[in-house]
Length: 120
Image (tube, rainbow, N blue to C red; front, top):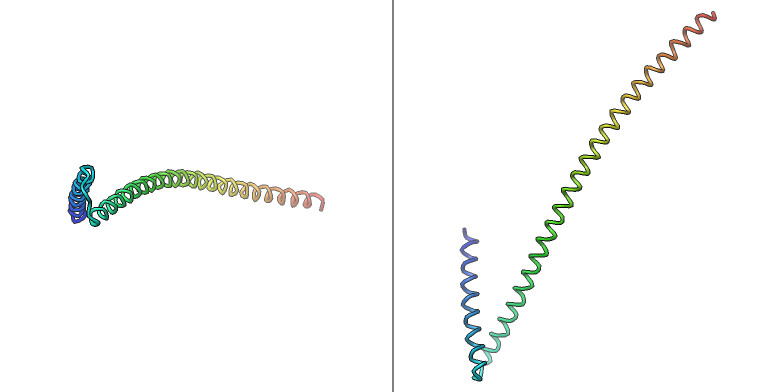
C-alpha cells in the first residue's frame, strides 16, 4: 500500500512539474524573457524526461532479459530431466548386463567343473 501511495505522490509531482514546464515554454514562445531559474528548470525537466525515457528502456530490456532467461532455464531443466532419465535407463541396463554376466560366469564355471569331473 505504501508503494502505491508513493507512486501516486510521484505521479502528482510529475504532473505539476510538467504543467509548470509548459507554462515556462509558453512564456518563451510569447517572446518573454526567462529567468535563470526558469531556464535551469527547463534544463532539469529535459534531463528528467531523458532519464525517464532511458529508465523505461532499461526496464523493458530487463523484462525481456528476464523472460529470455526464464525460457532458457525452463529448457535447461527439461534437458536435465531428460538426461537424468537417460542415465537412470543406462544404470538399469548396466545392472541387467552385470546380472547376465554373473549368470554366464556361473554357467561357465558349472560346465568347467562338469568337464573336469568327466575327465577325472
